[in-house]
Length: 223
Image (tube, rainbow, N blue to C red; front, top):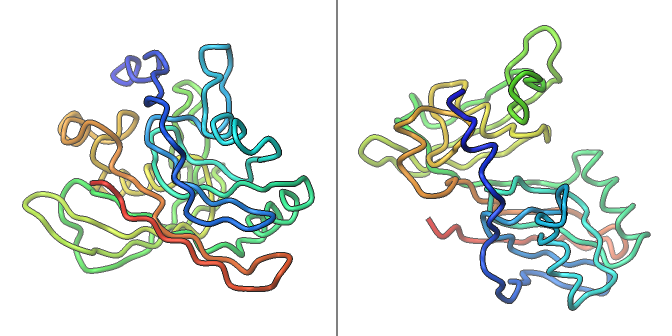
């Protein structure tokens, strides 16, 4: 299978470096996860190195609230107590967190913005891939907007309404504009256009569950 090499390649996390903390208060951390680092430990000791373990080296009580794909970089929320973890998890479950991503995609989309509303399901014979499944898939919605156009590709802003696995990657591929550097989706040409997945979680916004204050975090992609 064309994707087999990507699925079976060894886990090679980026070198240890200080974690970039974007926001901090008594109950929360928002950090920048580098591309190539798991959010939480995987199966086996060789996959123990991950974002949460690196944060816990200095913040013993840090707990993961949500996840980003290993290949995706950008903003990730961690709670510093079980109570805050539950409160923040509820915000994500209620879709009360505004999430914004930036990506470089193959080709130039028609128009300046649009919505992808395609249900997604696990592609069981080809795990860990996901697929569009009009009959058995879960409702999935992504809003996109062109930021800039280049020769043969575009920079887009993506806002997922739902939070399905690989949602942005599958949705952009489904409309003919796969994210550059994506080893699981797209074409040989789009995969070869970048050394890493060109997808970055650049914005998070929510109402703090304790203080009631608006929390806004922003991060600029390195691509």
